[in-house]
Length: 293
Figure 1 (cartoon, rainbow, N blue to C red):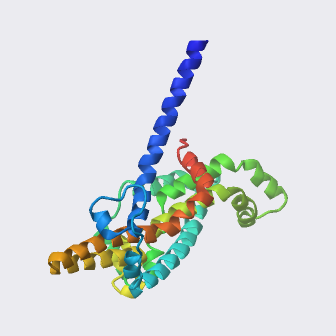
Figure 2 (figure 1 turned 60 degrees about the vertical axis):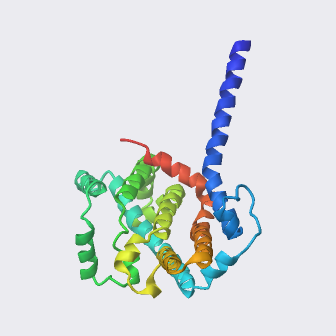
Figure 3 (figure 1 turned 180 degrees about the vertical axis):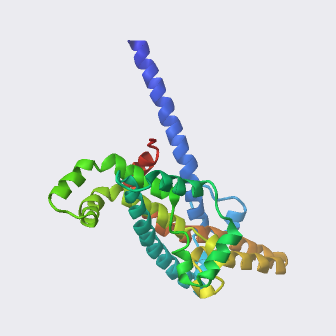
């Protein structure tokens, strides 16, 4: 018995040790970015920053927020994220619900139809030509409409509805004279808060971090999201550094490095604030996505 208790304690020790180690590996880079963005640029360049900031300064943030495009980028990103998330929820949730119904006509065909694009895409050039033909180039809708359908999300939503919404609810609703639309709005959606939160979070994070689509379809600066604006500012800083020399180039390089840390924090902080409130739903969604038929 004593040997068994000793083995359990040893096992628990290693479990907690590796858990703490993994937490440190994940959290420390984020913490370093925060303290480096507020520290003296020389101390950061010399590798003197480890756990606490040194000579707290805000010059990187001042230089970053001097750019008027930062504020328009923030506004555009918020608009794209809010509108895109709402539209993706409407499109994907309704498609997933339809595919979960037993009486859905051609269910096997549509399942294959939505599964194939998960492995094969049309490519960048055909997609661009399609978006251009619809007149969405240099249009805010280019960040909302063309990529709203997510085949993976539809499959996850379908699995959730099939495994969590019993058929007896639909039968009871029919006996009370409930229509399909009313049943979906008043019964199915209130019981699906977990999957709505998960898909909403996935969509919001994807749109918030998206810069490649904006680089391809939005050439006007006033329409570009925050991620693309920050990318452009950092490229401009790098070009200015190459034009300088001596101490000036060194100071510009140190400031540019700090601005990179500040840009990472500015661009990720708002979306990271959503995670504590949606974490439990996020875990449920991951489990739903792992269910196989």
